[in-house]
Length: 175
Image 1 (cartoon, rainbow, N blue to C red):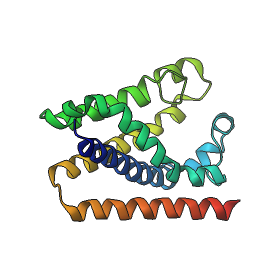
Image 2 (image 1 turned 180 degrees about the horizontal axis):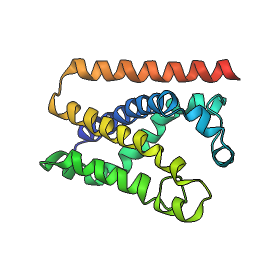
Image 3 (image 1 turned 30 degrees about the horizontal axis):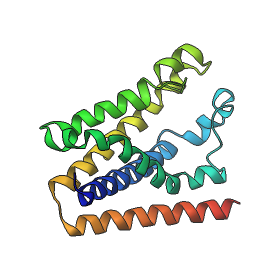
């Protein structure tokens, strides 16, 4: 494995994750009304209000999560990139391991339905955000590898910088 290929893979995983996370988060905030949902009695014990400074900083911090995600996916990089349906399989893995079959009792997970007091309707609502995220994440990654164009890398870099800047500005304005 060449160092350049590893860095390219990590870069693409990171920007795909950050952009997908941001868009899915905006969708959840405005379409799924997370502001109201997070204010409910059950969810307010688990989630910070959407107006909290750390929530505003979240999209910027996703850069670090994207790097961690890329390191976790690095051992199966050749499978993802080499198999006919590698990106679709990646989406299924992300759905299964990060939502449905988490180790902790998170809302919407197998454990969440068993061990939390969160009503099932409040757990199910997050599926729309998760599915949108997975479709965007794998879609952006697929586009990156299918159409390896310099202007795409520049576009994704610009989006990453804008998302990070908006997140940082929001964080500092809420402090």
